[in-house]
Image (cartoon, rainbow over all chains, first blue to last red; front, side, top):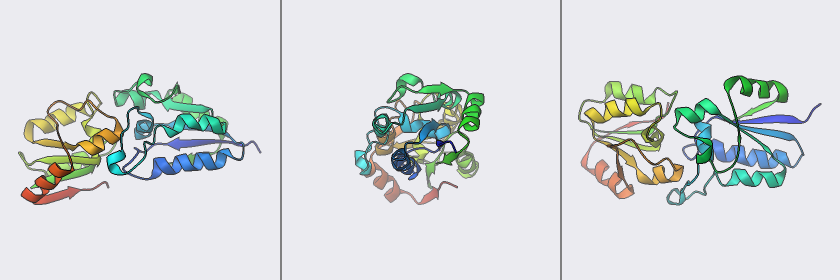
Length: 119
Length: 99
């Protein structure tokens, strides 16, 4: 069995707990030296936007955590290009360098990794 | 009545559903993930401009700052928690929650 998995983030951060839980899950499974690809699409792309200041919500900025995942050997971050475009976002608005992919390429990633954890 | 909406984004019909019900001139407050609809130049901007033509529109600044989504669509007024309380004190409220 190949130890490959996609973690798919499709929901906006802060309003619900999914983004934080996805992050915790990635940290948890990274320990097992899986080949992890983190994919952001739809409102999930908001997780990576720069300048998140959630202190008044009594929360920590969620975006800043993702670049640190490289220390856990999580190295592949993919963002859906149309999801960015629809929200007037570009790669330069994000907290880290990412791969961008169109819908077909995202589907290929799913095909390659076989397992998808949805958030 | 004050309409408050805590989720409005691309691909969701929550805002459309509220708009169909919300009478002209009723104020609308976007908070939590509702503020995402207020980001300038997204594919929802046209919908927001139509809304602004008929309603006072507010966005909770704490939720805007948390998400890093400024600038907002022109005409959206930002208010803080204190302003939220004042609006709620001075209106009866129709909460339009995420479906």
